[in-house]
Amino acid sequence: MGSAIGKEGPVRALGAMSGTSLDGVDAAVLVTDGRGIVSFGETDYRPYTVQERATIAAGFGKWHGPEVEAAAKVVEEAHIALLDPMPRPELIGFHGQTLAHAPRMQGTLQVGDGALLAETLGCPVVWDFRSADVELGGEGAPLAPFFHHACARYARLTAPVGFLNLGGVGNLTWVDPTKAAPEQEGALLAFDTGPANAPLNDLMQSRLGLPYDDGGQLAARGDVEQGALELFLAEPYFARIPPKSLDRNDFAEMVALVGELSDADAAATLTAMCAAGVAEAMQHCPQLPSRVFVTGGGRNNPVLMQMLSVSLDCPVVPIEEIGLDGDMLEAQAFAYLAVRVARGLPTSCPGTTGVRAAVGGGTVSLPSP
Image 1 (cartoon, rainbow, N blue to C red):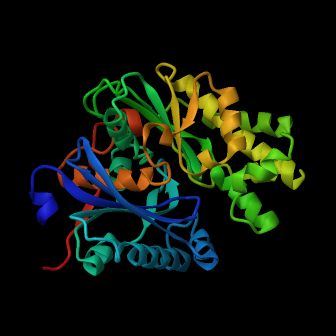
Image 2 (cartoon, helix red, strand yellow):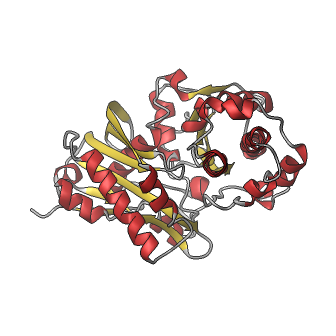
């Protein structure tokens, strides 16, 4: 079945990720045997153009139709453009682009054809990571927690920690690194904390034509509207016991809640909502993490980081503090998960997605001989 899939020991895997914040495609190489991390390799990034972003955004919330097909084409072409010049790995982990996520109803949809990538790039591709989990009653998200467990062990951490990814949606992984395997009971708890950058990015785009609040500069000039924040925290989602997950647009009404506010006050309030969702999430942790490591674009927003520091009862630091790359962690995660899929290892478990039993997702596509 191809070199990376048939061989023993560590392989060079290349992971690619396109997140809900729609900034672009991240790619990162990881050397791993699917259990431990051996080393981190090169990384690269390709931003989406304004037109590409608009084409993908037009497909959000849709399950089929011309908008979905157009979004898939953009995603495939952007990935091929980024991955083709990179040195050939032994295996590629291709997440695709989530357009719709409703695990309790229709399922989950990531567009982008992994078989097309395998053929074009001449390399085995693992893709469609989430469907098997959803079919077994799981939320299909988040999927990075198994990699977070490997990162905590790679960094030789010994006390429980949190990995907080602040992309379009926020998600938290609570990790006990003393557990040898991620699927072991008590090793992991993971769930979405609430909206993160998506509502703020949408506000910046619609009001100011900017992709995001660079450095939190707009939010820093505003005041938080407490009434809107209280309405947000009254959402039943926060009381639900994890595991639980969200679609990018599940809290679309947040932007309506701040509709009457000035640009600065609206930005401050949406930023505070992100931090408040994380603070609520802490109540679900088996015990308080010794530290929370922040990844994703949100860690570059000093206003958000300050709000998190004030509202959480433990230190909150960028993941770079333990020598990891907060921009590339999700791409690295899909490289790691690709190797696990190729070797028949689970990629999610009851503590991460609520799936009934530990399950390995993913489809493996091989190029023509």
